[in-house]
Image (cartoon, rainbow, N blue to C red; front, top):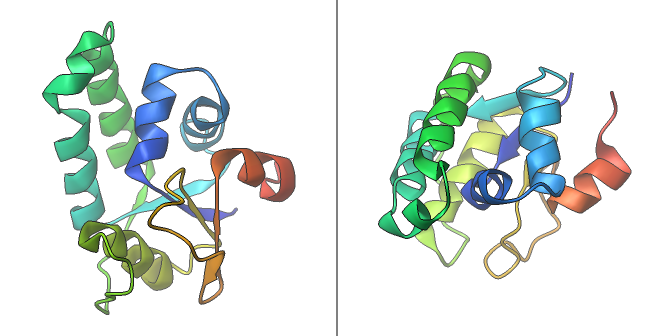
Amino acid sequence: MQRIVIDTNVIVSALIGSSYPAQIIYNIVLSRKALMCISSEVFAEYNKVLHRERFSKYTNFVTNAEIVLNKIDELSMQFIPFQKISIIKDEPDNRFLELGITANAGFLITGNHKHFKLSEYGLMKIVNPQDYIANYYKE
């Protein structure tokens, strides 16, 4: 089973729309077709971002975010990163790289190409949701 790390923006997009991010969260992660890897720092980031006031304008966003977060917490494998990385300009984004390296994840899935300019880090590929589904996801 593929090990994946998911950037917060993918979860936000999944809760707002029905495109590739939603497929990743609902059809892959919550259906247990890939193993989502988390750390306490990454999960805290999810919580912080998903509870921002600006998302309350979307119908049922907070309720759906709570459901998704609870399922992620239940289904994901928890890791404690063993090294600090500081190569991404937006410092909190380094937590995703740290997690991916520790978890031996094959993929970091992100829509944030402003900060994640790398196509890979170590053995982990850094891909957008569409690229992951089209080229790397194997059922």
